[in-house]
Image 1 (tube, helix red, strand yellow):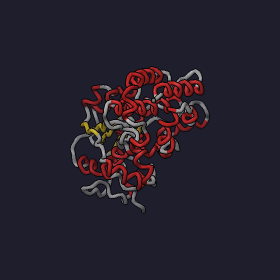
Image 2 (cartoon, helix red, strand yellow):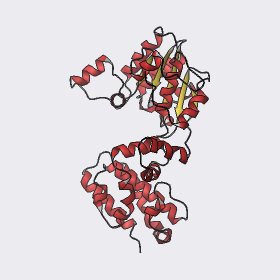
Image 3 (cartoon, one colour):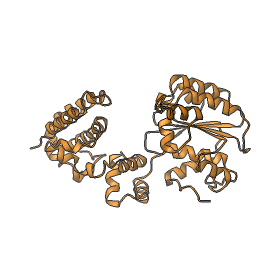
Image 4 (cartoon, one colour):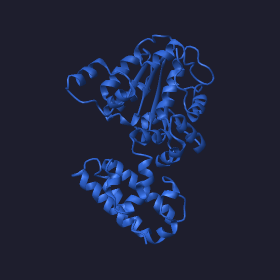
Length: 337
């Protein structure tokens, strides 16, 4: 039996910190891209492992194998159906049947039906004798009815069930849910750790820094950018192309993706104009700071315009026209001497 892939070093550190702590419910909170889901799954694996060690689950016992193949009877996973399909978790028989029969599309939120299944799951006897675990991710995707259903179970949990909620927007959760969980704020990796990990995932060294910068230092997001095919080649040429009015540089992006990229570019240009270091772009890809000082007001106005555009990014009247308008606004803001 093969071991599951080793967790990233910053996730491994947090596993060691959390595995022996008491509490029936944990909330892992922090921004996207820091590994909430891998850490939540690692905790579930450790709690159910038949021979756990100080660093977490053994990775080779029948329980660990059952989790690896998504078939552990004592682990209930609550996610939006779209994400469960993406990550290889099986849907309930009814949900899978409805989707197969084209009665509905996979849900993008955590449905109350799933929570009702969890209530029944929590009342069952453990199949393997190591207790039961409920993993909820991203927890903020529960609708109001689902969240209240979970709250009742958290308030009166069965003796042998543990909960691990992972969230990228914990402020959206009911305060009563947050108050019933032990809180853990996700730790950021060092740049050295993140770059080494990206290279271990097959990212060439020359691209790793641009990817990590584009993701704001968040390794999981950086890897997702690479898998999307949009970065790093786009990232390197985006500033110069927009300064020349080349709208084609945005052609592979949705309006929402384009606005996110432009907001990061505008953010860095404002930092440079103020004498600070950029966060999202390699300095060599950006205009010289001296040329930006006189454009501070234009850049500030551009930032406000991007915030306004972001409100309609998911439902543009005409995506092509919106991308052209975004490129035109960028060119005006970047009209450097």
